[in-house]
Length: 203
Image (cartoon, rainbow, N blue to C red; front, side, top):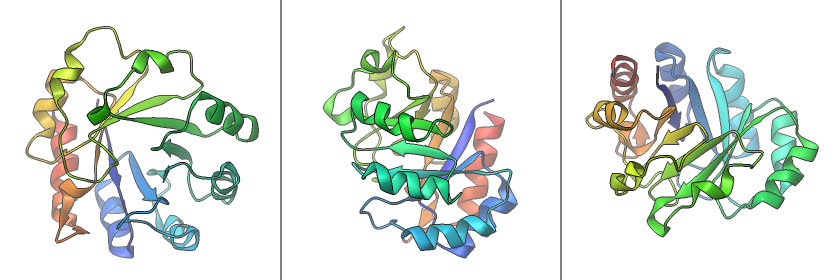
């Protein structure tokens, strides 16, 4: 079954919604963004999160020491790298943190080379339209090249309840990642969160 990640949580109400509807993953954005949260804010929210929902930290070219602190404080259990982090960065991160899963985002707008990550210590790829959280969909024809993606991957970029089921049936991603697609006026909408999770579960 395809998994679901709701990214960009910022408020107690967001946590209440995901606790009720139970996605597989949620995301705290630590990079500069309109959805950015501080370490303290994320820590407070993580204490309210259901143990059955896995918290992910989203970073863009962040100091490794910062990521280590957030992991060691128990705020997140998965690391998502959304910048220009290379394999050397990943290896150094692994030296200090052996346990957390690592997701590496690839920006489809500038082309992508999943074969470069075949032997990487990352666990998952995430295919997005750009910087993340833009609500834009990339050209899905790029996914029709067989045999290039060898790691489990998240499909992101413009996902919403209206298009997720078709994308899942066509491309069979490991997971679907959504942020703006479950928002109203820039804030997470509990009803849209419910619809998105139901759509993915039933696809």
